[in-house]
Length: 123
Image 1 (cartoon, rainbow, N blue to C red):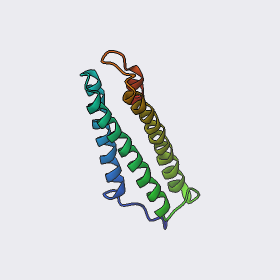
Image 2: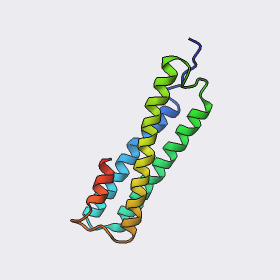
Image 3: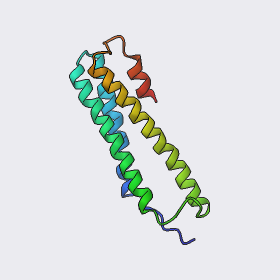
Image 4: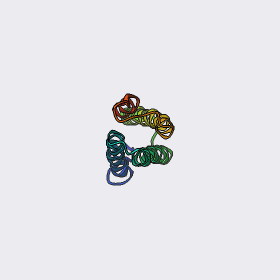
């Protein structure tokens, strides 16, 4: 009682759209590498990285503006643990994609030799 929750049609919906968009752009990057179009692959991979950073920033703002804390009942602890682990997953995934972007820019990936990119996408 007394916990003011977030409007699900605000930042949570925007973050969902960002994550779905990053899934589309990273799939685009993978397909571009398979088609030997490295510039398009690099552009779409960098777009995925930017979307990951944007998601992380919005989640940080959401945490800052929360009217409850992790110690405010089961709701607060569940919210921060669940979204915190997901946020950590996005941060690590963004870092993985950043390294793959550097490798793609250096020409390390080929049409039939790009498992490092695929593994980062799977994560």
